[in-house]
Length: 126
Image 1 (tube, one colour):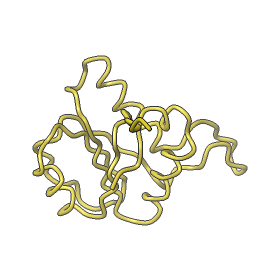
Image 2 (tube, rainbow, N blue to C red):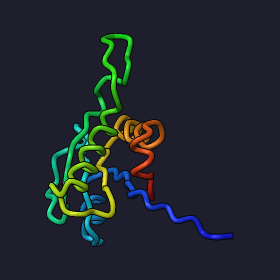
Image 3 (tube, rainbow, N blue to C red):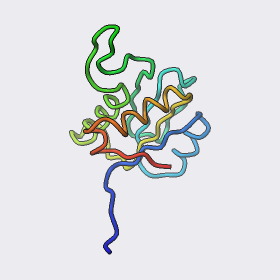
């Protein structure tokens, strides 16, 4: 049986700034995704691109206001992907997501599991 090669970009959910710093220091070009409310913005030397998402934003198609669309983390990952492929950001081979709390981790997981374009481009890692 031939081995399966998954060429999607891995996304690592990290709980705190210290974990993010260690992951950046481990080397390799990385983009950073920051959840609003995950704490103070850490120094991001070593990150080749960055974006933010708001885990408290309304879910797609919510009943209270009818907002449609994609999960906020999916939109942020899409912006990172577009910046990379259009040459507005250097190439990165991983995304380090500073999630901080359960709501942000759940929002990131919802994007990675439930949004078709995100599933095609990225995969949960670690």
